[in-house]
Length: 146
Image (tube, rainbow, N blue to C red; front, side):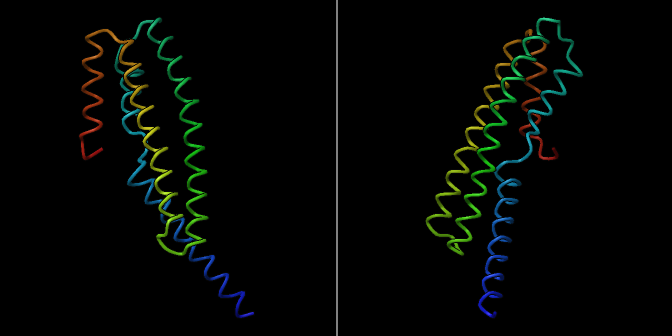
């Protein structure tokens, strides 16, 4: 019975470590898409888009939402692999390192896709709108209060 308790304690500690790793990764490495939210608020609330711009941006948003959902699913799978690696190694070993590297690869891909999406939406705007758009993107990326 003592062995079962020890195994349960190890499993609990491994789960807690995996949970903390996921939370740290989400907080430090994959923050909420604040830039995207700021940009979308500008597009849909403050810029006066014509019907063609609305249609084109809507199509871009649908395509990006599908790509983002697929990458977020991949990140959830990466987090599960990270949790398994932590449970298996009980420390920062090669499996944990590999799982972290893989999750960072997908996070980087999502960041690149987000930027491509932002630039694709920018291409739909008139020059006066693009100027406001650029300012909102720069502010969202550089304002430490956000």
